[in-house]
Length: 123
Length: 112
Image (cartoon, each protein chain N blue to C red):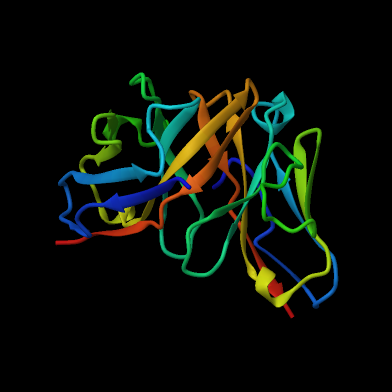
C-alpha cells in the first residue's frame, strides 16, 4: 500500500519561500508510469492543482502559479518537494501531495493522496 | 473560478438518488479527456471515487456511478446513506493550460 506524507513548516512569513517535502513509502517513486503532484485547498474552498513532476525530472505547472513554483524529486530518498516563492496570505492552505497516473493519452488522475499539511502565511 | 463547473450543493434523503454534474469545455472534457471523481469527507484528504468516467476503484460501493457525454459528466449516488455526506470534486485534464490538471469547484452533498 503506497503512502504519502507531507512535511515542512506550518508557518511562513509573507514574501518568503514555502518549502514542503512529500515522502513516499510502500513503493519506489521511480517505478511505474506515475507522476507526482502538489495540490492545495484554502480553508472552505476547492482544490487547486499546483504542478507535477515525473521521475525523469520533467515538470508541468499551473500557469497561474508557474512563475513562483518549483517542484523537484529526489529518487534516492523517495521524496519530491515543493517550493513556492514570494508567498502572501492568499497562499494559506492545506497542501496535499498525490500520486498521479497516466493510463492513456486522455486519462490522468490521482490514486493516492497524503493527509495534507496546513501552511499559514503570516508575519 | 474553476475550469470545471459543479453545483455548489445538492441534497437528498436517505435511500434516494442524487446526481452531481460537472461541465467543462472543448479543451478538457469535450476534447475527449476522461473525468474522475473524488470524495472528501470532513477533515480528510480527497479519495478517488470514480476514474476514467465510470470505473470504480476496488472498495468503492456500486452505489456510486459515473458517466460522461459531450462536454459534461455526472456522478450518481443511489441508496443515499448518511456516510455519503461529503464534498465531491470532478477532475480532468486541460490541453489549453500547458497540460494542467483541472478540478471542479466542488459540490457539498447533504443527506437530509
